[in-house]
Figure (cartoon, rainbow, N blue to C red):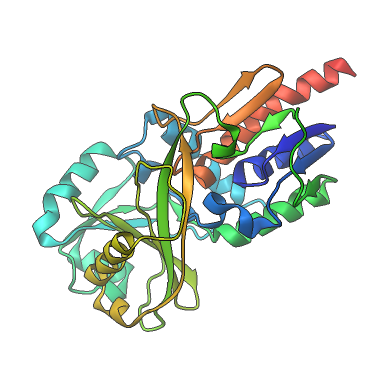
Length: 315
């Protein structure tokens, strides 16, 4: 039996990869259910490795490149790419974004209209990352739970982990040396009169924002990055920034209803590169930062490669 602490996206992905290899797995999580896993529950669900290359290390891009096909095994993935735009006054931001990223092509205002009719006449140029995708993280987590359980895995909600586990995926609760918290805040809004079909990133020197369609006129707006370990509800500043940026993208968002707000503390190491590392007899999978759904599949495969051969040799 392989024991795992934490049933967020990292813990569930590790459990799936291990169970797929024939291992018996048991996950412990002190939350009462999926909704109690802040970072995973409030994630954007973007599978955008090449966009993330703007600020992420090349290792993150490399590890995230296979995530789209991995998630498509058991949940709906929308493969419509990512459209990156900027207001005319911020064209320098678009030029810099293009220079720091790969696997994109420049698009004109007319092409933007063809891709997203709702943005007709609003932007003169942009970047289109055709190979990227997005998913609904809450549905994806639910489908991942079902996949783990269908392979015989056990998930014990509302149950603290024992003193020793084989794999620790508890994020900030793991209290690893060098691990810091980066607060992220988001909002889910309902704007039935705005019709966007893919992830849109609006560049701004101070408040960049992404808008991810969730279906039926619902959109996720995110996300701030604040170097703090302070938990709690979304701040007024964060909400004003997110909503203001959404309005700059499309004025129809002014009439949107705010359905939900949320925040979470993302675990990150000093170099912002996630890793699986041994401490004693426990393998810690941590530091996923803002790349949870993007990086979890690769870290899960690495974890299974570490543990499954050991178990087979021991038996």
